Image 1 (cartoon, rainbow, N blue to C red):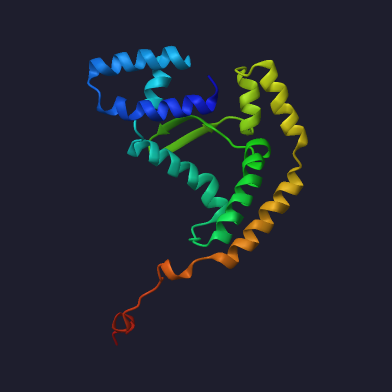
Image 2: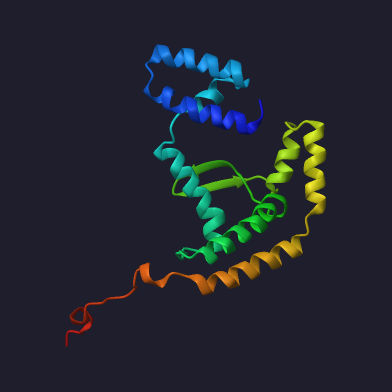
Length: 189
């Protein structure tokens, strides 16, 4: 079963799964695992409806990548959408192949001080290769994608898109900063 078929099958099963009783869910899970080859826990995650916790994890990722590179401005035009797509197309390989991150290993509290230990900075690509979970074919395919990337060209494309996006900021919905009440700004003498 290819990925597109699995996605369609999962979407069809989600509605049935969400309304099913516990006994019916067991039968639906067994059927889904048999047809797709998914592990039972992965099938449960795939068939559950998105929760607020999943949304919070997505927003956390937005804070570390999207908000850092795009900012907090609002874009509402079709031209801005095309620029965002171009930006994400350049940003995805740059972040995954060339942007190292440190992972928190441990946190230790001593009185009022907190000591945090981090591992060596590595890119998501390096972490995936070092994990040893890739098949040799997939590893060679990823190496070919990595070799085809040019980090300087990706950064130039990102900077070009960021500059162009500045022209498409929707100012009508932005919150004004400062005090708008003129009486509150007077001083007491």
